[in-house]
Image (cartoon, rainbow, N blue to C red; front, side, top):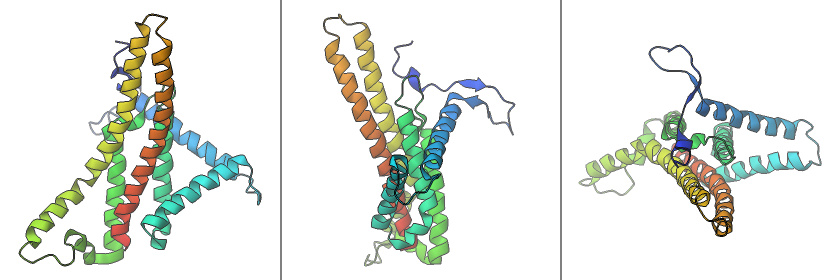
Length: 241
C-alpha cells in the first residue's frame, strides 16, 4: 500500500470536529497543508516588505519581482482597468504557486491535486468575474455570448454554445490544474517504486531520472500557477473591456 501511487492523494482526518449543518468540517491533511502554504506566503511577503528600503535586499527584491510579474500579466491581458483587481489575481497566483511547490516536498500533500479544491478556487474566480462584468457593463456584459457580425439565423446556436462554454469555465480551469499536478506526482511515485525493487547496480539510472522529474515538477508547479492566473485575467478582460 505504501507504494501505491494514488496513496499520496488520500485525504485523512487529523482532528475530528462536530458536523456543521450535516457537513463534515474535520481538520484534514488537506486543511493542514493549505494552512502551511498560506502561512509560508504571508511570512515571505511580510518578511520581504518589513523594511521597505529604497535599495531592496534580496528578499524584498523577490517580493517586488513576484508582484511586478503579476502586474505585468494583468496589464498585458486586461489593460489598465484590470489593475484595480490586483488583490484577487495576486492572491490566486501566490496561493496556487505555494500549494503546488509545497506539494513537491517529501512527506507533504499536494492540495491542488484535488479537483474539489481547484474547483472551489475556480468558482471564486468565475463568480467574481461575472459580478464585475455586470457591475462594469450592465446588461451589455451578455454580449460576450454573441460575437459581432453573427448572422441572425445563427445567433440562437452561437448563444447556446457560448453560454455552455462560459458555464464550463470553472470545470475546465479546475481539472486542468488538478490533472497536471497529479500526473507528475504519480510518475515520480511509480519510478520510485521501481527503484525499491531494482538491482542496486541499476538503481542510479532511474534515480537520476527522478531528480530530473522533480526539477520538471517545480517548473510545472510554477507554469500551472502562471496559466491559472493568465486564464483568470482572460476571463476578467471580458468583464471590464
